Every structure is written in C-alpha cells, then in structure tokens.
Amino acid sequence: MHLGDDLKLDSVRVEMPEGANVIIGQSHFIKTAEDLYEAMVNSVPGARFGVAFCEASMDRLVRIEGNDEALMKCAADNAMRIGAGHSFIIVMKDCYPINVLGAVKAAPEVCHIFCATANTVDVVMAVNDEGRGIMGVIDGQSPVAVEGDDDIEKRRRFLRQIGYKR
Image (cartoon, rainbow, N blue to C red; front, side, top):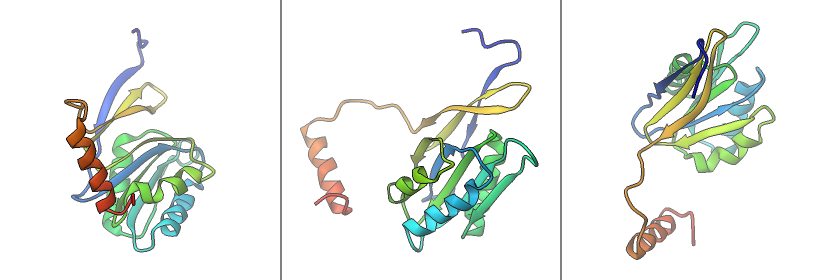
C-alpha cells in the first residue's frame, strides 16, 4: 500500500508499572482530562490512577489529572511518547478496566477506545508533517490454539472465583 511520501508508520511501547492496567482512547476536547477523572473516582472509590490527554490545537499540552503522582507521571510520559493529538491514556491500579470502562466510554468527549488491558501494548502510529495519529494497538500476544472443554471449564471457574459470575 502506498502511504505517500510524507506518511510513515511507527509504534510506541506503552510503559506501565507492575500490576497496572491501561485504557487508551481518542477524545475531542480539553474537558476530557477532568471528565475522565470524574469517571474514575465515581466508578471505583479507592482506585489509584493517572489520566493524560493530548491537546491537538491551542497550547498543544498534555493535560493531566489523577490521584496518584506516580501513575499521573506514567500517563503523562506515555502520552508524550505517543504524541497523538486528541488521544488519552489512563494508567490505573486498585481497579480494573471492566470496573470503569462504561463510565469512561460515557464521557461526552470520548470518541473511541483502542484498548483496555494489563498486557504489553504497542501503539501503532501514522506520522506525517502535521502530526501523529493512532491507527490501532497491539494488545498482548497472538493466540496459540482454540480452547477445549477443560479450558472452558477453567475460564468459567475463574470468572466465578473472582466474583464476575455467579
């Protein structure tokens, strides 16, 4: 596929502390950072997190919110390395994406979620003279097989053990 002379593909590895999860998405307005903060604190009291949102115009700053300095720094550092306008990253501990994803997606500015995971994540970027855009993510590793009966039972037991199914 011809990408054009000024369009290149790149990838950025997301760095996160042990035991953390991330949500990466696209949004459209400076209010994103504060609204995602509200989504997090209203979903899971006691969750620790950092939010970083990349402005695409005006001051073009990485806007940060959160309640944990180390996770706020981690989110900001990842946002700067990704560098895609109107993108955001939430780095969280003491909660899981499943606990907050509905509220995050319901924020009026959120356009798209690329991933919500604890896996290794590479953000696939398109880069041209104007800036950088997220094309997608590589979330974890490729599957090695289709689950069998024992795997199905193990999965079902696990979901009940951690309280997500009865």
